[in-house]
Length: 297
Ligand SMILES: [Zn+2]
Image 1 (tube, rainbow, N blue to C red):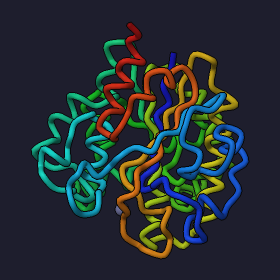
Image 2 (image 1 turned 90 degrees about the horizontal axis):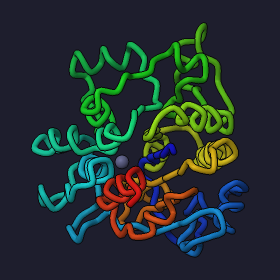
Image 3 (image 1 turned 180 degrees about the horizontal axis):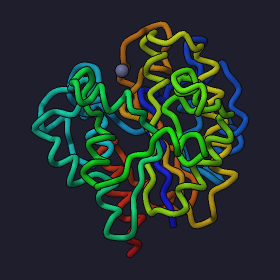
Image 4 (image 1 turned 180 degrees about the vertical axis):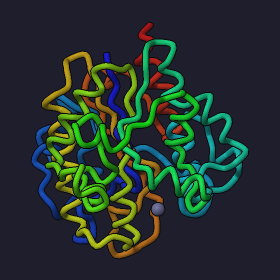
């Protein structure tokens, strides 16, 4: 049994409009799972997949943000309620210890091993050391579970994924070592490496960057990458494995506004975890539900 947890930063679930790249770009692999595009119309249990619209706002006014949203998602705590606000970028200091101790990566350790599929290069760790950037919720969660971080050597051999799915950024930084990859093959690699672990986390924040207008990659290309990633995972995962894809807040699905949105986020589940995750109502319920998947009663 392996859980493949794909975290896609900043995607909300709403209806079709010309503004919503999930409505304007074909997603053939997604279509085969949920009968149509990744829109709120497709919510429900399908033959192979479950799609839910999950709350990320927690009845707190303002726009949901990554710091509290990712803490809620990875640690299964009401991060927004605990600090009474939506905090952007990085987890609230007061909740970081809980994130270390309660993340899905840490919870899986009683049942086997956890892994974080993303590759980080030396430049990333140097930027952390010199405080140019701060640790994301995922990095804090992985540290709390004592997970070994993957690097360029693993990325070069298909034993890790890059945050942009296709390795373009890492290839430009390490042209002698890293090749770009089709997003479908990245999905194949992810499902393969997940087979050795109870819980595997992968995150991409390309969607949030594009949603904020901070990337020159067009939204349709991003949708295609996500679709092919999912296609590669689903084609490769074993019957006992589950794919769980979700987000921390909306953004990308409303291209005319560079801010986050209050839309619910999608929770897409493929595999045996569908039986448990249909109970999820907000993003803080996902970690507990995944723990029940790891420990069937
Ligand atoms: Zn954002």
